[in-house]
Image 1 (tube, rainbow, N blue to C red):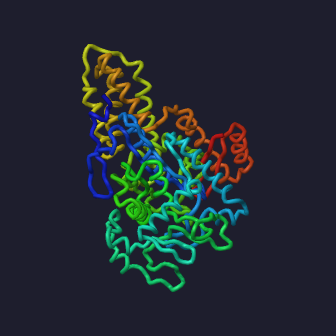
Image 2: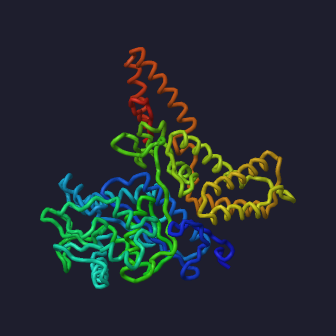
Image 3: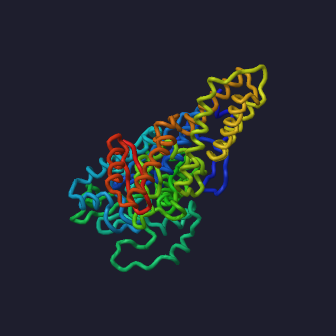
Length: 493
């Protein structure tokens, strides 16, 4: 009997605004689509957090015995600078600025995206389609939408007619917005737009002469609208209706709203049963932004080369930190939070490493079966990783009590405890059992901090020879000091 027969999952559905019992369309099978990155720059830590949430969901569904087809796309064309169908394609703009081919931009940042996710121990999706690889499917969708009277052609571009669609279907059903309110809050068109109404969105854009990325279509040489690619790829690989569609909270409107409208216009029924949205990541209580300097890249967490953190952190420590917040909650990324998570992470790893050496008894002073179900209960409640982690630490406390001789466990329960801890820690949360030494922390960190302070004193005393000697000799053994206005940090090579 598969585990999903005994475990009932409740998922918060953004469409209904309520937690709902999860029932897949086809028993034992789950289709899940998640909006992937637009590959024109290094992957943002906020994106990593979103994809991590769905990595855990993917892992848990697989653990329960579901056969999961997880589709996560790569946007390598068609994403303009803003949601008003204006501006320049972000990939083409990057290519123009660097005087390289757009596909060089795509390749560079797709590789970066995969490298970062591999460091965080993500499972690869079942299918990772690209927008440029599905131009034909997107053109065919546009033809269907036009034939169904929900789109119009102007000067070689094709626009979705939101007002026409809203006559029979509610536009704004996901974001709980009404078209009347959108009209009221939208400025009138300036007369230079091809759109009939400001709320309409592009399905196909005619390319200007200088536009690099372009494909032939029945309407013009151009490129598809951003919203269209996800409808084309999710439909192709998961069908006209599938179980789960996920993404960041910022995609709910207009991107996901437009996906629903496109699919309804093509197939006359809702495309997705459960819409899941991960919340945003902030830093030090403020929005992350390069322009303000309140920003960190994932690789800088691993190297420690950023003024907002005092040291390097292992990828699993950063993963553990992010999973201590529920995916629908805002997560505040701070150095203090990482330091606390690092201590907690190693407490968990130390307890798991202790299990093999524990002595067994004739009885258990801890109900392991009941604790195991609490782990499932946490994940069954809308994938509540912070509650799961708190429950895992109940086992950590018990393991330490067994070691101290103040608690007992039978051989059978010890086996169950070990199996459950490893399943939830490694297979479901996706953590990796790294040693303290491999992270450049603890004793090494303390020793280097002493040398950093001695170097600081030397510089204050204008003993620059000693200051340089400390820096250079640390560099010789692979420890690089990084000076900034906020102080000195170090990275290990």
